[in-house]
Length: 131
Image (tube, rainbow, N blue to C red; front, side, top):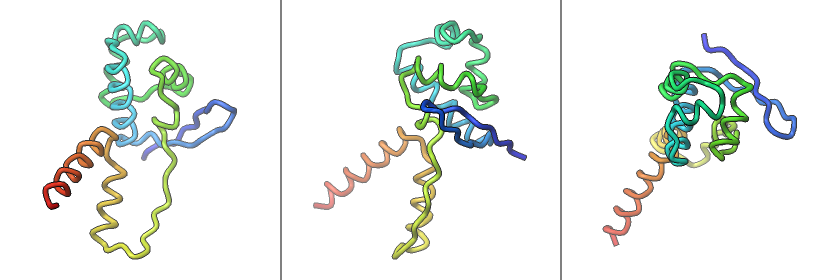
């Protein structure tokens, strides 16, 4: 059973997140992409937050997730908002959408931002070719 944990977001707000495998993988991917974008190795990032590169490997693979007290430090060093790691669930409105369209939207929301960007690029190319 997936556990829930609370994290402290700047400004004193508390927010519930789940510790499911899906969430750990998504958070790990965000950490890895942000780390690479900053040009940091796992060892360099680990040194900045007082963790070993093995800990970073486990986070990035989704084996474990950072402790609550580590989230804000990671986000500060990687220059990403906490809300990027733990976006709020969006209500799904299905007015006028077919079942296929609803499934497309649900699956879209499960993708990492870089995968969404790739798909948008393919769609734009396809629409351009259709003109």
